[in-house]
Image (cartoon, rainbow, N blue to C red; front, side, top):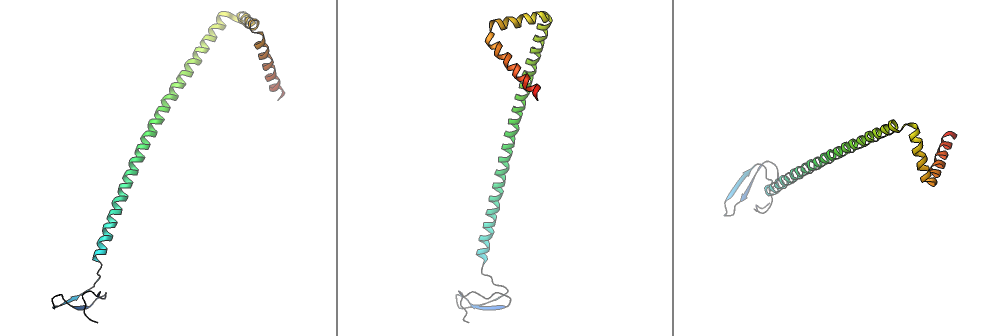
Amino acid sequence: MANNPNTPHPTGTGSCSTTGRFGGESSHSGMHTGHSGTQGAASSATGTIKDTASSVMDKAKDIASSVSDQAQDTFSNLKDSASDLAGNVTRRANEAWETSRDYVTNEGFSGMVDDVSDVIRRNPLPALLIGFGLGFVLARALKE
């Protein structure tokens, strides 16, 4: 085999001798890989991939944190709205109870009968339809 500087060296241990560019011989001992540039590129690519993965993970954490904060705000607002609604319903129910109690206390049974008869006289057709509806509902309930 001719000693050509462009010919790859066999891998493994041992020694080889090559003719240098200026006619002198140089002697090497050890392993020859010839891939130092490839290893650098692979190492650089691995570093770039790690940096990109780290950046993606950081962005994902930021997005998850933002979504979590928005969800907490939304649930807090819903809780406040539900609490306000419950308070309003309770207040109105208490007002209706108080009004009904005052009406029954002030008018008594005879006053309520007089008021119902006045309503029926002023609105006979709706009163008749309501009577039929109540009769139908009671008949269905008693039938079952």
